[in-house]
Length: 214
Image (cartoon, rainbow, N blue to C red; front, side, top):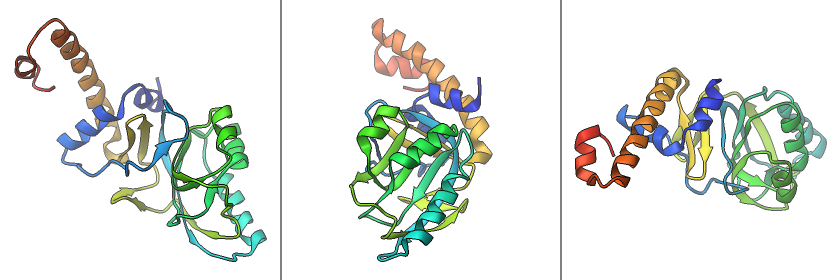
């Protein structure tokens, strides 16, 4: 099973607990970034995208940059946007169609999305801050790709692992991803034992003392 499938089989709470134990206490993105469709899950290395508001931006210049960027997102990756914007939609139907066709794992967008019903219908995973019908092309400028980003105090490097589910979005630094994955899998296996023990009547503190976690 690939790392993406293994991360996706976990839940973000377990991953965050492992990161906490390693002293990485600030790896969870803001709670305002939510899935377009409840139950959405995604996992993959980050392809980072950065931009800024640019009212009156030349349409052709703007859209060419955006389309070139969409063509650069590798299969299996999560496009992670820091838009520095709160008014326009940087992602929509045709962007989703393009990334879906080329095997991208999803999008995490500190910005806006539109064409929500279409994106939900085709099943492309998107987590975003807000929705709006207002297009970004004449209002926003893509400034860089594959650069370090910061979202809500969390630093995201290209290639860091991004995992998201109903609880939120967590970023796993690439240099510790393999170790975090193995530890989280072991933790989930232990939690399954704890869950059964508690269901069988073991008291919470006793379970904690027995297993060393709860």
